[in-house]
Image (tube, rainbow, N blue to C red; front, side, top):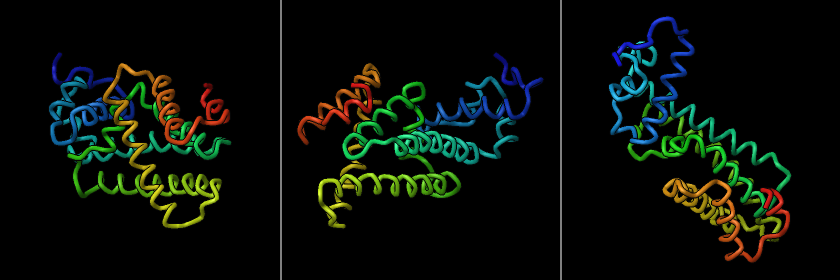
Length: 211
């Protein structure tokens, strides 16, 4: 394959989308620090100058990738938040939705939570915006769960939110580290884990994900 294969006769929007798809996967699988523009150009079958022409720099391309990945994950979080589920049922639905969304593109998660990503610049700003929105959405869900349990203490709610954030990310990361586990099987595992800690989940929680 030549370095400039397929660069002619393709609309700019289509070419940008192709580069974005390849770059998201490259950054997500190898990390920002270990991924070069040359790697992405080779995987996309195009020239390095074309990437620089479209995105300006490696950092510019990465920023667009981060924004795309963050919006992809955010769309799933928003969808889960609009369901009629509450309490632990909502937690199960949120996890199940994330497993389903990431199944065909698992690199999206590691792209957003990449420890080698730049600590400033456009990528960093995109991640900060995503984190702020995610924090607010998670706080709403945890607050609802605590109120249903009869606990309105602000400190308890804040601490529980911190625990939930850690648990959620740990469960998704564990699943990504075990690609042999299907999304449905992982949701079943989460139900078992929650049942072990909180007692058997009610029918609403199981019904919400078809269990």
